[in-house]
Length: 444
Ligand code: IMP
Image 1 (cartoon, helix red, strand yellow):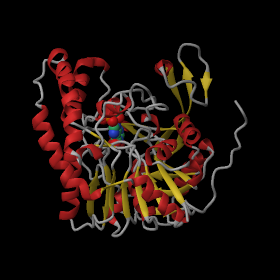
Image 2 (tube, rainbow, N blue to C red):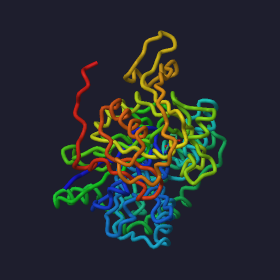
Image 3 (cartoon, helix red, strand yellow):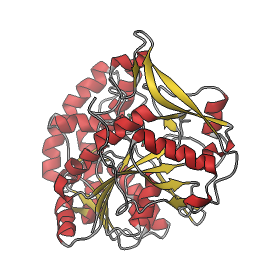
């Protein structure tokens, strides 16, 4: 029995879905614990590409229980479309369980996400415009609508009669947008409730029962550590807690029930949306990493936006190891580096004002802008790793590159991905039962 959290160690899009998919083979329950349809999880099996936004990628294994937790925000229209899409692909949705307590993205959340972003001008966050921030804001303000409310028309009506006039004041007066009709929303969303009712349960109880039955539970993070509301590059973050601690809160499981935390990082870095990205590359290197026009291109799964690309950042990597308590790492997309003669890795930051050098992240707030990466320049291996299936067959320089990252982050690398397919993978150590990180860093 092992209960494992898979978490993004960078800015999201690290390839978590592929790693979850690999581990889900032995999982009885796969749980999404935060975020909503801002996520885009891609899994490639037998040449077929599956894209998920709300549903855990464990759905690819028939009979697996797939949970959407209370910590998520759910656009019911998007969920219904995703359920229809997975059914049309012949996938089994009988294990799908959706929390009655998950908050619902309403039409005003979508409108406000768009309007707030536009009003920020240059200071925009670059959201996915899926209404994520406004839905979580209403949850915190205790004005949210939960999935259970869609199942009771009287409750939904009472809530909307209070909420919609207030939202209309903001939409009309602040943003000059058309007002919304509470009655029309009631009709539409009560209908979604009827359609989703069969999936709606107390998911924390489902997970607890699985724990008692000593089943294997996999918690699938969305977004990444640097997008975490509390621990990311605020305000350029998402509105939930993608980091490992978020799994306990979002899913409703105690920390004592977690056995392992696996971080996922690309062999380089990418980011979509605005915000600091110290190792970002704009020239030839950036284009090389982006791979525009190929099946492996760095384009957002949800929004289709080109991703910003740059070198691996060990300072942020060490930070991710620390705030998530990572036991081991999965490194994805190593093959993207096959084409490079030289590969840079950021090993520290230098403060351009004071000249001070930092190996640990001194601040993720406003001083970030003064920090310049200090690089080590490593040799590339100029050879395809796509067909490699065992660590011993990797080119020596690729092995050295991985060892370099592992040493700098002080965490073992258990999995290396060398292509999009499920099988394009090298298992270096058993990620669940193999060696895990031992705290060796001296106190700062
Ligand atoms: P939101 O989550 O739509 O509010 O967007 C907030 C920030 O998180 C923006 O920079 C988005 O680009 C980023 N973001 C949200 N979801 C993802 C994701 O799944 N992958 C990568 N970035 C994301």
